[in-house]
Length: 410
Image 1: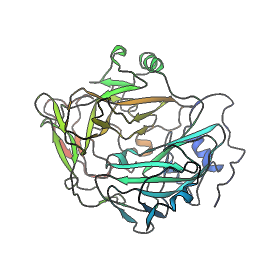
Image 2 (image 1 turned 90 degrees about the vertical axis):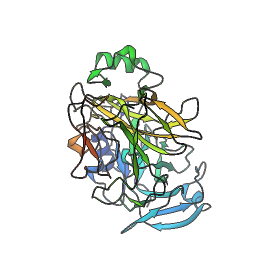
Image 3 (image 1 turned 60 degrees about the vertical axis):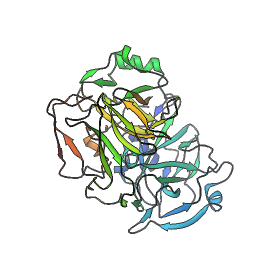
Image 4 (image 1 turned 135 degrees about the vertical axis):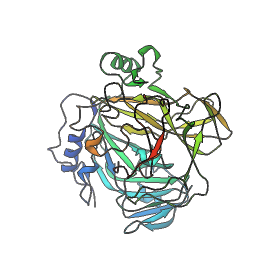
């Protein structure tokens, strides 16, 4: 079915630029700017992003591609190996194989509105690589202003074979208008004069200590907890990981704990996947949205984070001097690579909102990662550190204990 033409009732302010907040996303859905044959659940609409859903079928492909001057459907014919039915119980996607899934949502963007997609945090934490492609697209995840047509999600499980099914959300979409990104000077001024964006030990990081270069750098916490655990490493030859269940999964078959060496450092094994934690805590106020960008040091030996959205309110309702730390997805390339506590490994960019959203990231929208002190994703039975430790490091005698229930699905 071709996308419906957007209703004239979808309107934006005559002037202004920014990421569209929740009320505009709801308007976009009601007016056909974002459409689907199945009703889009309101719970999928986040403060500044929309959870996209898998359609009925997944195509196993021999290679990834970009459509360029062609449509995705036409280009796909040359590369399909098999077709998997995602209805009912779903299907298993194997590791290191690209799959393409038509998404339930389609777009009919106004000429002034562009879109961008990113994997959900829970997707990145199980080492599943995703990116959106569109008809006549020359870039992944970037959707041109005025685009009208379907959306497709490329999925590549890297560490675990995964169970998926129709309706599962693995990625998110943001809509924006005009110039939105803050410059380094604007980030520093906002941090100093309006709201502290980065905190350490419960205190704002001094503006002169911010590391800025087309965004704000975060560093690693490799001090860890009382027994030196700093994160997790994905196991090789793990069993299938079912992403469609509601019960928390025992992480032991999938992850090994990683403990620091003397000197607060670890050595990354080549091509292995690690979940680590930022040393600083982040606080995103209602006026801003943020994105963790993929970062490759010039040495070329390390990749951190697959990119992801931080909606307004992340770390904001944790308290005026708390924030929430960021979970970091890290992989070394071809040789063992040593990283140390405090090493800068990832970067946040900031975009202004068109207006503050009516709800913020946190308990009100069932968010899983507010106040996080643990890197494992929502699918797993996670450990929760005892309160009293400042952001950026554990307190004396701090211990861990299992959580009793699964987090809300976010």
